[in-house]
Image (cartoon, rainbow, N blue to C red; front, side, top):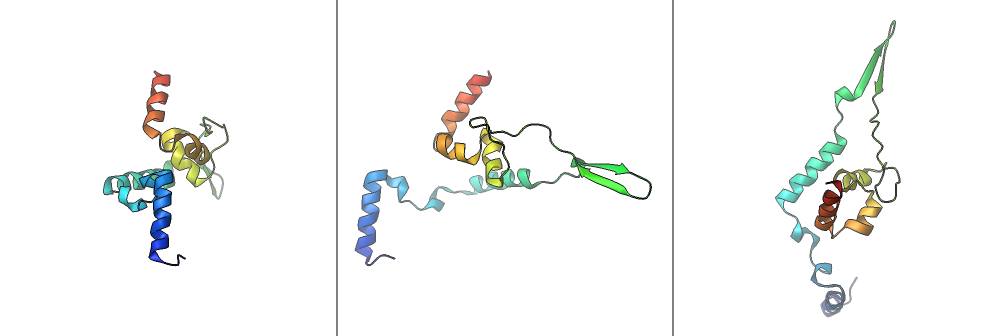
Length: 122
């Protein structure tokens, strides 16, 4: 990919000067066991299938089992698009937005966003 080590170092230096140290750091350096635990809990919350989410209707010789739909509308609070992709649910759990709006408006400003939304609800 890179011709020499000096070329890679030169490229990293240029990126660091233009975008800062975070642009060239290893992504795993900011990840710890607490973040991993939080992430796994959020994934489990999304993927959990509760047996009480099903309605059983008994007929003569058979049973109809149908999923009870959650009637709460899951829409992004910014663009008002429906949340339907798995990646959208991750950002919807915490910020009530789709993935696109999270990346566009919230990413990197999470604490500020949460404090503003809390002050609006109070």
